[in-house]
Length: 286
Image (cartoon, rainbow, N blue to C red):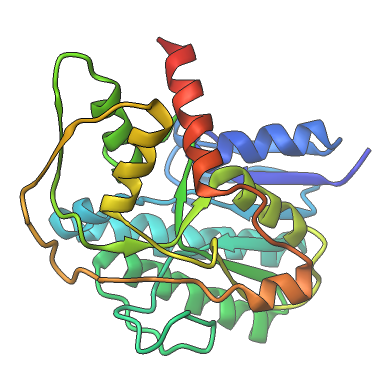
């Protein structure tokens, strides 16, 4: 039997898939989710004989971080501090899932050496959590791998995110329009199963390491809509409210050279394939 693994955020969009993959590959998995309590409370991590922690538990919806920043700092920073303490006391290694914290790119693609400039309470909370990871690695010898995913998408993602919101409207027979806030922003979209592949590779990583994880190319909101319509072989009028989010970033592309070279990882799914999987899954659930 392989080593025991603790997954925090095990019931989340990524956590469910990661947990299923771990079990399928023979790991003993301990799960921490919302029903277990607050991740920032040390009393809520009573686990024993854990070899590695995959720390996904976090508040993630960027617009909400502007409305209630304290809750993001408490969960994302203090929750990570609690997990790091658990690792320090129990001799566990850690994989921490961060986010895009570079701000507006000075150059594309964005490498791990790009200056950090978090532009939202959410991304700032992730940066602070990264600094905790770095400090514990340097001073307490906790073995930490940090992954900075760009935009993860896939089946069963919450409708508040861009791609499921577009697909929901495209499949809605009661309307002949698709409405979005802004057509112009470009993002690096990574299929969720490809990200799970990257997470699995970090379990055996024995040193402090930091990796960007993305597809390596960007698509605009308009590109996403057109891909969805092409897959469905349909056409709908697209309406843009032309509303620009606070601290909006116009274009993002991940430089994935480092993780490709050091962990032999690269994405397997094209964007078109990912959209097909989401639509198939959505139709099956109806």
